[in-house]
Image: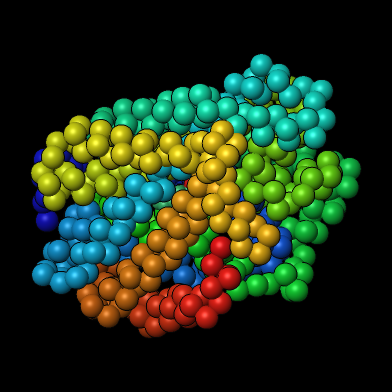
Length: 460
Ligand code: PHE
């Protein structure tokens, strides 16, 4: 099938796709959101449920998204219009486009923090600072409206410029070389973190499940985190799959992406938790967690400013390779469905996300009214937290449920298997994949949502 119009493009090579998809998956979700969520949901039990969610749910949803994208060569709305014309399924695609807009708004704000911290670390702003001072420096950093909006703006402009370069020139080139480098620095941080005094307490928190901390809310958060981290449930992987060639083995590609993404998330936890307990901080502090913990590690490393700055630089790059994949979803929609030029589509998507991100950027102290909009069981949610919860968690859970139901019950398993056999003629795991996509994924996700209806307090 030919691409729907000439403004689209294709991946340059096989490995290019795995790197690009991993580039989408690996980002703030792994290094910022994962440790934050682990810290808010009781440590090791959460990690365990997270791993189960990756293997039992996300992996299959990823296969389903790749297949839909490659089969139709369309954006998420176009997929449903093509495969189920005239039906309400297209609203599932519309939800994805809206979610892309919602996530990109606050994602760019947090990505802006990495730029601020890149600068601060490079100039040695944290040298000799105590853990408490480092924590209050984060507080004043995020409370400064001008800095917050400028960094958010800068990040969104960079994203828009890369996306205008198109698929091959833009996304792929960036993803290839830099991810291995991020992995390298992360390993270094892990080594330093686990050799700090009292690191054992953090390791125990991270690795030894305390079953009394297992809650419905934690399970839902783990599932949401797995979808977020693997870029599922809003059509990113549909869109990326749509640029994929028929020769690619989708099962192999999905396995690689899941494995690499999980590796980085787990390493981030190993870097954060030992250091956190070593300097005596609270795991449940929320969005600032890594920014409050990491400078403490850099202070205890030879050439710490250099490695610290390098780390934030690579994290910023990992964030941008994810953010482009988020903004690409609304952009692909405008290009395919509205026949806009790539330039206009990207400008409107990025501009809209910038505007929506402004209240998020101002919600950590700059505008007091935005910093506590909702309190449930002692946890307070500001605007950014709320966007993160609604779009970064619930939209993705609902979107993934929709994808599983669509592929399992509407498009049908035989179409899925036919697609999987392209590029992988020996595919034999029909029963396994059929069971997970048609029954396990929809039933488990639906049960979680039903649980919420009866326990609305578990919502946040
Ligand atoms: N997976 C990305 C990350 O972990 C974020 C993302 C979410 C990207 C949803 C695309 C879609 O940083």
